[in-house]
Length: 117
Image (tube, helix red, strand yellow):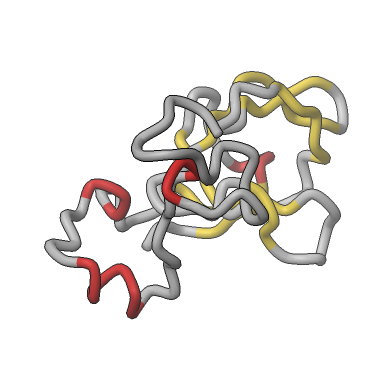
């Protein structure tokens, strides 16, 4: 949890997240787990940000952002351990096309273990 303040009050090079695009609309950029953007420059009425995607974007200096990085950085590295744990998250099983029937997939069917179709 960092401090939320306008981009005008932040020094250059600050790591930020939860950035407003339009003043008063609330944070819309860099909100995913572990996301962080960087304040690169301030020019006139706008500030230049480098977003997590690598995109450089101009935003009004009056828009606010939160200082720091979003938490829960290693959420994607967690080992679920078994199929049931994945099921609880709503993830469906992945079935290979070669084990399907011909009506279900172009690689399905064939005699024995045919290479394709």
